[in-house]
Length: 518
Ligand code: FAD
Ligand code: DLZ
Ligand code: SF4
Image 1 (spheres, protein in one colour):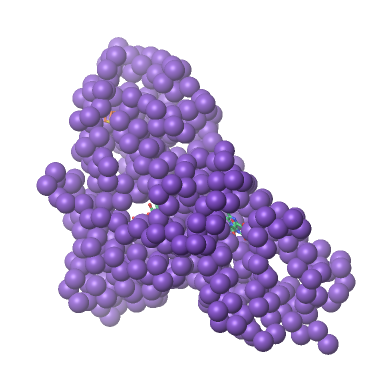
Image 2 (cartoon, helix red, strand yellow; image 1 turned 60 degrees about the horizontal axis):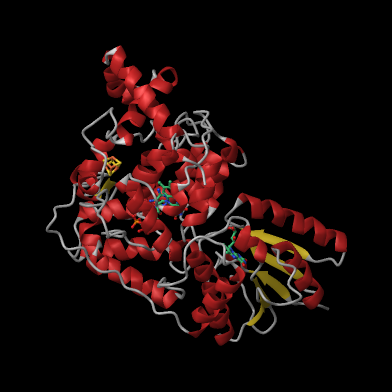
C-alpha cells in the first residue's frame, strides 16, 4: 500500500513550521518546490524580487535536505518543467504516486482558485489520492476569525481590530489594559526629521554561491524585467533574516515611532525595519518579530511609542489587510469608487520627472525594490490618487516594483489605503495631501524646481493644484465625510477665478509631456 505524502510548498511558504509540513515524516514523505516561469511573469516582478524568491526557495530546500527530508526540487531550467504550478503538481503526482497530498492555502486568490481546481483534476485521475489544503497559520488571525469579527460591523476600522488582537495575543498589555494607558501613541510619533540626525546603516547580505547562480539565471531569463540584480543584498535564509531583524531592534527600533513618517533624500530605509521581503516569504515569523520588539521595550532598550507603533504595523495592519483582501476578493480587484481612468505616467517606470519627491522615491524603488511606507503612500500613492490614475495600472506597478509585493497585502494597501478605490473600506477618508505635507515631512522640496508654496502658475508644485482639483472633482461624493470638512470648506470659499486656474493648471499638467504614459 502506498503511504507517501506529497507536501507542496510554494515560493512564499518558506517556513519550516508551515502547515503543509506540520506532520512531516522525513522517512516517507516528499516535499515539492517548483520554480516556474508563470509565477515569475504573471506580473513582471523586479529583478531583485526574482532573485530573492528563487534564492530563498533554493536555500529552504537545502535546509530541508540537511534534515534528511526528501525534496523534489524543480528548477526553472529543467527541460521537463511545464512552467506553471498546476503542471508541476500533476507531474509530481505521476513521479511519486503519493497516497495523499498536503498543501497550505496560497496567499493570492488567483493561485488559491487554481489549487481548488487541482483537487478536482486529481479526483478525475481516480487514483484515490486525497488533497488537503490547510489554513496558513503563520498569521495571528485565522481568516475565519477575521470574517467573524467583520460580520455585522458597519465599519471595519483597523484600530478596533488591533485592540482585539492586542487583548487576544497579550502584546504590550498590563492585565486588561494597554501598557502605558493608551492603545496608540501616534501623537508622540511622526515628527519631521532634524537635519542633524544620523541615519543608521542597513546590514547587507553578500550573495553566496546559490544566490550568485540565481542572479545569473535571472539575468539570462528575465532581461526585460524592471531593475537590476546589481547590489542584491536581501537576506535569503532564516538565519540572515534573523540577523536583519536583530539589527533593526538594536539600531532603528528606538527611533521608529518618532520618524516613522519622515522622508529623506538618499535614505530609503531611515528607521524602518526592512523586514517585509523576508516576512512575506516566511523567513521571519510575525510572532517572533513582535516578541523581539516587546522584549526590547521590557528591558528598556526602546521606548513604548516606538514599540507600540511597530507592533501595530504587524499585529494590526498586516493582519487586517490580509483579512480584508480575503473578505472582499474577487470584488476587491474591480473596485474603482472614484472612477479613475487615467494611464500611469511613464515616469513611474523611470523616475524621470521634475517633481523631486517622485524622482527620489521612484529611483529608490527601482534601485532597491523597496521604499518605505510613507514614500509608497504619500508620494507615489498620493500622486496616483490626486491624478486619478486607473487602479488596475497602479496595482500592477506596486506588484512589479517591490520585493515584498504579494496581492494579499499589496491590493488593500494600494486600492484601499492609497487610492480610496474601495470607497472607504480600509480608510475613512482618502489620504490626499498637498505639497505642504511633503515639505513638512521631507527634504525633497528644497531641491525641487517647482515651488511648494505656489498653488497655481508655471512653477507651482503639481501636488498643490492636483490636490484642490481632486477635491473639486469629487466634491459631491466626499461632501458627507466629516473628516474632510476642512478642505471642502476651503474649496467652497475659494474665489471662482482661483478654482478655474486650479482646474486649468491640473488639466494642462496631466495632459502634458510630464505625465505621458510610457
Ligand atoms: P516597517 O515600516 O518597518 O513596518 C514593519 C512591518 O509592518 C512591515 O515589514 C510589514 O510587514 C508591516 N506593515 C507595515 N505597514 C503595513 C501595511 N500598511 N500593511 C501591511 N503590513 C504592514 N507591504 C507589503 O508587505 N507588501 C506590499 O506589496 C505592500 N504594498 C503597499 C502598497 C502601498 C500603496 C502602501 C501604502 C503600502 C504597502 N505595503 C506593502 C505596506 C508597507 O508600506 C510595507 O509593509 C512596508 O513599507 C515594508 O517595509 P518595512 O519592513 O521597512 O516596514
Ligand atoms: C513570487 C514567486 C515567484 C517569483 N516564483 C515562484 C516560483 O517559481 N514558484 C513558486 O512556487 N512560487 C513562486 N512565487 C510565489 C508565488 O507567486 C506565491 O506563492 C503566490 O503568489 C501565492 O501567494
Ligand atoms: Fe514634490 Fe512639490 Fe515638493 Fe517638488 S515642490 S518635491 S513636486 S511636493
